[in-house]
Length: 328
Ligand SMILES: NC(=O)C1=CN([C@@H]2O[C@H](COP(=O)(O)OP(=O)(O)OC[C@H]3O[C@@H](n4cnc5c(N)ncnc54)[C@H](O)[C@@H]3O)[C@@H](O)[C@H]2O)C=CC1
Ligand SMILES: O=C(O)[C@@H](O)C(=O)[C@H](O)[C@@H](O)CO
Image 1 (spheres, rainbow, N blue to C red):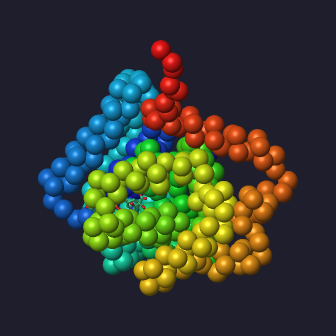
Image 2 (image 1 turned 135 degrees about the vertical axis):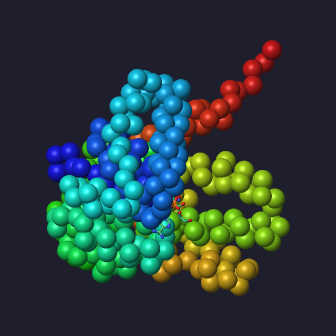
Image 3 (image 1 turned 120 degrees about the vertical axis):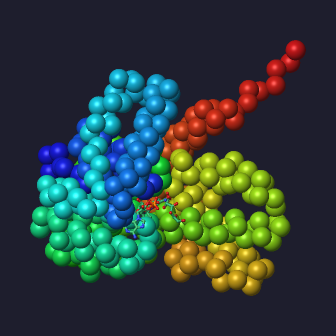
């Protein structure tokens, strides 16, 4: 796909964000309001969407990310269509993002319309944040052109897009989406069919646990969030979760999980089978040379120094590194 014509169905938070990303990168975008409404209501939806995108762009230009002169051309690349004109808005599209609410019935209705109005080879990508691709693929004619692309919010800033092909998705569809996302500066990862992909599944547990801590009065909401920002979250910008298990030690995770499971009498803290097996095999991370990753061939001193240096850069940027005490 040279420069595919993009259509987005759903004019809410994600639809608007994805439209902004592609228009910013020079693509023509048809942004379609999927909901049937009066002409007046639809115009109000478009006015708000345009205002929101303009607001994001002015914000970025105030931070010197782009010149204000670029804003009008970006906005002009987005054409708004009410739902009654969905057919003409989809006719020429090479790639359509479905971005309607996370409600099975609504997704089904819109996918039916996409079957009707798109070319047979038009790629259809759902932006669902939790539905497994297999639960949606059955609604799509020619499912070899269908997959899920889970963008994170705000789409115009978050680099990650989780791409989940179903059992019928063609290799060509997957490759085209990966190439396209990389070409616009996003970082795609592939996820096999599974509810919640990677990030929503991890963060559902983390967010619910934070809510439970507040509910149980273990700490104040302010302190729970301070702990998530300055402790939990910070290091994961430079270390992946599995890498972090290897750094800290799979044995520590194993012991901690069992202690938490016994203390709370809750299975949700049980270590998964892979952590138990790593423990039995002695693959407990950096200190044993192997865990989720193999460190045996790596220059460990260099790898660890580079990782810590990135972390120090981040802390420095956030004003969280202090100079040493100086004698007067
Ligand atoms: N909000 C978030 O942080 C994220 C959401 N997602 C996913 O993106 C998709 C869209 O979510 P949002 O943009 O947040 O939703 P939203 O509620 O902001 O926008 C949904 C759009 O669909 C329209 N709509 C509502 N009812 C409809 C109906 N019956 N028929 C057709 N259109 C209807 C709304 O008017 C709106 O234009 C969902 O699948 C969601 O799970 C993915 C990542 C992050
Ligand atoms: O990470 C994101 O931006 C999104 O996936 C969400 O916040 C989701 O809506 C999800 O994780 C539901 O909590």
